[in-house]
Image 1 (cartoon, rainbow, N blue to C red):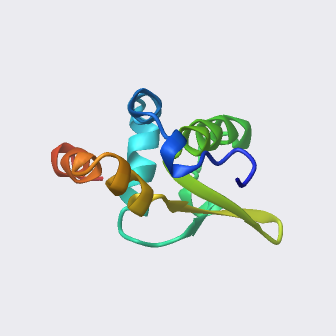
Image 2: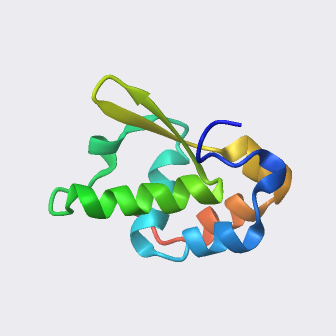
Length: 102
């Protein structure tokens, strides 16, 4: 297992729902759902402190919602869509469908 990334069978619904229970994290998921990997800096709102974003990345990563991998001085983030769809079919699509546009 990659450190701090749960195996697919360890992803729990209550952790995913908790992670997606914050508007900023939902906005991040909407951006990542377009299928792109993005750097932490590309996803960080300008006025948001890096330490605050570190907390949000940790919640998303530890719940199994995102992958985070180092690349140079940044982390690259991607959505664990396949794992989430396999574990909870239709959940991610339902959330994206009802979320207000960015």
